[in-house]
Length: 231
Figure 1 (cartoon, rainbow, N blue to C red):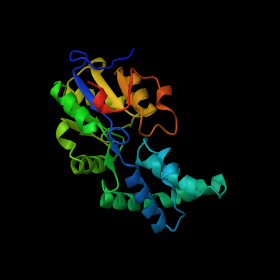
Figure 2 (cartoon, rainbow, N blue to C red):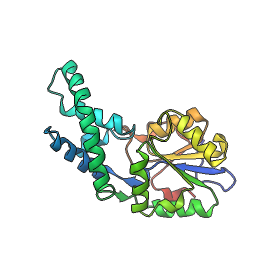
Figure 3 (cartoon, rainbow, N blue to C red):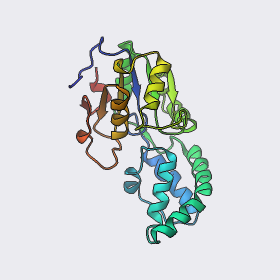
Figure 4 (spheres, rainbow, N blue to C red):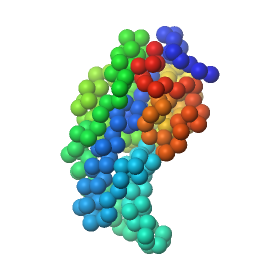
């Protein structure tokens, strides 16, 4: 069922993903991760490799990056090395990411126009991301997007992350809306799987970070090339 264009009486609220949906943060990831790797005296990694690892939270991202740069090692040895390095990697990555947060990223075209249209339509909005909340809040502020959202939740706000439905259910609860009346806007299978499991309709943008897979192959209620096309 294609929900586009969105109708005024179709929903009571909207939940919006951050990385890959509103902001192209690949430059931030690339800069912070490579600073971390340099500090750990490990080989660097290209942005094209990082893109397929983004979207499942910082812990998954760091383990994926460490696994990639340690590829020449035996798998069992690499696993041991990753566990030994992880505390230092986590501390380094957090420090470097907070230092450059937003400095190498850009708001996608049509995002501000789309958020303004959603706001004018009267739908309360929440931002729900797998990014740690300490990263998400300053990024939204730096990009001038914080004023659109009644609630902001990160990957560490709840016990589990997307694609688990729990974050969406908790966000609906915070908004005071039923899942079936709350639209999820995202860029990946993480958003779609979480929405389907929570009982939320979902629309995906055709850009962003879908783990290297075409987003149109993901089960969703619609696809847009820009958030400005929603309403």
